[in-house]
Amino acid sequence: MNLTPYIRDIADFPKPGIGFKDLTPLLGDARAFADSIEQLIAPFRESKVDCICGIEARGFIFGAAAATGLGCGFVPMRKPGKLPAATISVDYALEYGSDRLEMHVDAIRPGARVLLIDDVLATGGTLSAAAALLDRAGAEIVGAGLLIELLALQGRSRWQRNAPLHAVIAI
Image 1 (cartoon, rainbow, N blue to C red):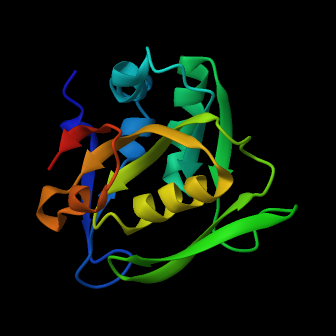
Image 2 (image 1 turned 45 degrees about the horizontal axis):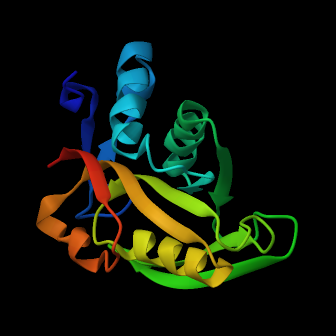
Image 3 (image 1 turned 90 degrees about the horizontal axis):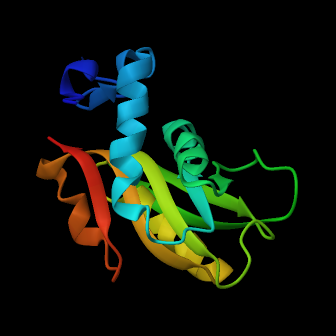
């Protein structure tokens, strides 16, 4: 199924000059949402994934659904101050600023086979930070799945991993 018609462009959000990919039309259509999850996880079905790490915020939506589809657990990677137990963190640069990503210290057991899931790959800063967090936790990253890759921003070039990077839609 072609998912592109379910993605709406919003100019100047969250800041002037940013073209935001609004996924709410896709999420609002049961068939499109289910197909997006199937396309997201298809390359990783045989990867023996122990858990999926979803990156805040829309990575939670796709990551939790993908975890159900692969029959594995889900671990949220959050912005600062949102997790109640002890955390590890990493700072990173965004297309429009900087931020920090956190995860519970005990969320990933060393050696766990982890699949990263997020909604959009732009500059690659968030995905690189998530991978660095998993490295600190001792995880084995089996790959990353993204709904959309914004080719012009060349975020894929920051994926310095010997693991597949799969985007359902390249724009």
